[in-house]
Each structure stands twice: as C-alpha cells, then as structure tokens.
Image: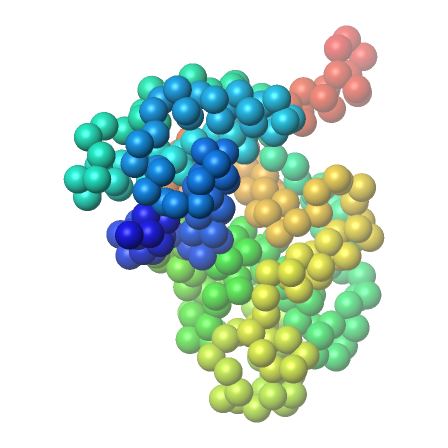
Length: 294
C-alpha cells in the first residue's frame, strides 16, 4: 500500500485541500521519507518521535526557516493522525514535538497612493491582454481574493446585475464579495472584449490566456510582479501582497474586523488580527518619524 497516495486521497476528499496544499504536503512527507533513507512508504509506520526530532535538527542545521519546519511537521501530524484512524499505527509520533520558534513576520502591503497611481495611469494597454491584466490587479486590490480563487473564477460566478462575485475559498467555503464601481466598470469592459476576442461561449473560465485557455499561476504572478514593480520597491510583489493591501486599506478606513474576516474568507479572527499589528506598527513608525516629541 502506498501510504502517501492514500494520504493524498484523504486530503482531497475529506479535508478538501487545494491542489497547492496537496502538493506541499506530499512533498513534505516524501522529504521525511528521504531523511529516513527509504523509498518504501511502509517505513513511515515504524517511525518514532526521536526520528522526527532528528529530522528537525537536520533541517535546522541546513538553514531551513522555522516557518518551513513548522509546516513540514504539521504535514506529518496530519499524516499520522490519518494512519491512526486507519488502524495502521497505535499512536501519533508527531504529537508532542518541540519546534523552533517562528519570528513574527508582519504582512507586506502596497501604499494606497501607489495603488491609485498604478490603476489610474493607463499603462496596461487597450487590447485584450492589457484590459485583462488591469482587471486582475483591480480585482485583487478591490476584493482581496486569493490567487487560487481568482484562477478558479467562472463566468457564472459573476453577477453583473447585483454587482458581486461568488468565490469558492479554502475547504470549499463559499463567500460573496461586492464589486466596487470602478472594478465593475472594468469588468464589464473586459467581458465585452473577451466576447469579441474568443466568442461568448469560448470557455467557462473568467480569465483566459491570449490563446483562450484558462490562466495559470505563473502567468498571474508575472502580471502582478511586473505591475507592482512600477510603483513599489517591496521585496515581495505577489498576489498575496495585494490581499494584504486590501485588508490594510479596509482596516485603515475603519472597517469592522469581523467584516474583514468574512470578506477575506478567514476561518477565524486570529488570521485577520495580524493586520491590526501591521497598521499599528505603520502608524507608530510614522509617529516617530514626524512628531516633534516622539
């Protein structure tokens, strides 16, 4: 029995994990198997807590970040919990493990005026790809959706009459996000040129490549990175930075934290509260820089 394949089926059907998460967890378990010096997944059944501690030490000594180590051990905990349920093992060897401390990393975000500059200056072009690329940036900034959520958008998810978009988030949780005026206008323009370019019924997917195929993650990353590079010097210029930017803008303008949580599709407030720390530290930095008595 291939225990990794069984684990992947469990994650897909029971936990409803995204393909991205599935690939990450499978790679993490295979990395542990490599550490054990075996290619046979049955070796996973005779693992002790000491083996896992040894892996943690090995990863730390190789310079791996504490955050990555935490993720890898989380994958093992989930794997062994699954094997326990199947009756393959008696106890979970990954339950009580001392892990390296993760330094707090505040999310990066683009300044509001920089985003206004980017979207107001029409440097995207008027052709299909130009309008599509601008809409991708606008949607990330105006809705805070995740990369996987945007790629998976279908034409049927957009309600132009009610001016909202339906998003299928993590663990298949569905949420409704309103479309602001400028975003709505640009979306209407995009749908028109999309129909002219590929036909009305060309594809069920909202965003298409220049060849009429569903967009893919690397393409979206390139669009976002090249666009943000014109207005910011942030080290990270990714779709998730625009998600952080969306949350920070809402918070700075007085939005309720619970409302932001729902709009972002967070399962609990802990994930959302990190933006309060970001905003506080930003304001504190401005105060120290500008106030005469700071």
